[in-house]
Length: 226
Image (cartoon, rainbow, N blue to C red; front, side, top):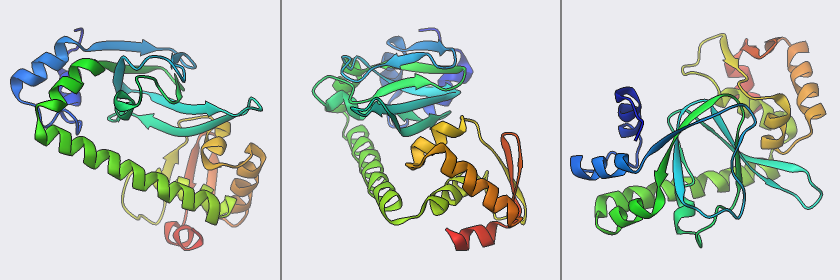
């Protein structure tokens, strides 16, 4: 274990570890390892043995799959404070997806086999895990709705609104922390479509674009369009 006190507190705030007793948490931390990834570094590939699940301390992890054509489809972006690959512990022992860093990233690798042993003996932990998986399932259903029923412009606007730090201020800024082609893949559109939508919103004076910073000039109007 090479975790500092701040890392441990960050982990304890995560939903999976909040139900653990002090001794159970200590057992998990004994099997934990901090990993540091440079931008673009792979973490695991689809089909690799699922030996660990992960918690992001800083940075961003991209989860993706490759189409037969070789095109990459971004399935999710995992940021600081979130677990990922926990469901893979129960899926035939292999990761169903690829994972790599988008930016410099620090994360914690937690031993899957040890954690499954805890789940078998901790009903509260088991219920937390089931609840989170249910939430993610509903999230994926909503994602399918967005991709099939919403226009490209609505998807882009929805993504921008999701990045707001909170509140409905008259003008709010969001930072695009990942490349635009990754955002486009996540939204199921082409990069050119993303650029056209941003240009149109800028022409309507609904947003201002300053490199990777986007100012939302009228949040309420954007919500109505979404």
